[in-house]
Image (cartoon, rainbow, N blue to C red; front, side, top):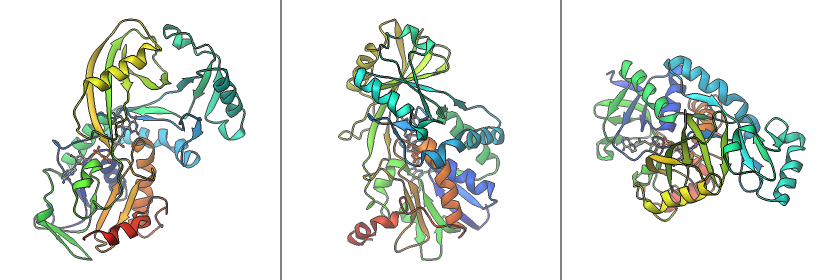
Length: 358
Ligand SMILES: Cc1cc2nc3c(=O)[nH]c(=O)nc-3n(C[C@H](O)[C@H](O)[C@H](O)COP(=O)(O)OP(=O)(O)OC[C@H]3O[C@@H](n4cnc5c(N)ncnc54)[C@H](O)[C@@H]3O)c2cc1C
């Protein structure tokens, strides 16, 4: 390994992986240190990207800037890595009652929703699900990424270029100054922490106001009749293989143990009962901790005292859609080509940093 490298990326979850590919594309030198046995939200993510979210069917933050680029971004990454892990997939959200039906019809008539959604009486694929009396919103510019596969192919890619080491980065071995960081005999311009939820244990960035949220998800097998459509009604059903579906996900802010629970599995299966009462079996059950933030915006930028320390984190429930866009913005910033978007720059919390010990 060379003795001088531009960036050391800590963590090869979705955030670290997407950022590493961005630096790779720009010909910037980097190395990744990754603990494969640590907690990883990316390993259990369903991988959905969806421009219309929430109870009130709102266009998600930066939808117009981001969603049109997502298919091309992941297709190009598939070509680079030589594998298939991305699929464009519409999402159907049924209306619960006549009031919501009217709300959906009204939203879909707005010009700003034209490229994203249309009112549909009942998509044919939902025939096996219980009758949807009030129609619903058919969302476009949506899809899913098989995140574990993307990570695995990326790992092989970085291994082939000797750009990844498997170990838990030990903070005590870091020698940090304003201009550089040394770790295990190698000098880096910057170290970029992409640790997901484990950032809470990072002595340099634990002052950031994370609002981590545990999520659990099931994989089920049954003849539900959905194949090229995801279904969202309290929970989502996402077809990932013939007669195989993700059923998810739960949100738990109180219990941050990354272990599966009977309560979550009952919650998900009860919600499924409201839309499907045929036979199915559970083939897998996983849990992870989403690195969500108090203001629902990512945490990106440089440490206030040591500019050689950086963070790229806080993608919450939307890493699949946000990480590519902000990897570009952050790489531009690192190369002094652009400012960071103020909404994501961690300097918005500098008052919290000043109160912390480091
Ligand atoms: C059930 C569930 C469903 C989800 N579904 C979706 C979805 O449909 N769409 C979507 O966009 N998002 C979804 N998410 C959210 C998404 O998974 C996260 O936003 C995203 O994976 C976060 O990626 P990350 O790289 O920041 O963190 P992580 O995936 O947690 O990765 C961080 C990595 O850093 C490593 N690490 C940490 N500290 C160190 C250290 N000191 N040394 C070495 N390595 C270290 C860890 O081992 C880990 O592998 C879901 C999350 C959950 C839990």
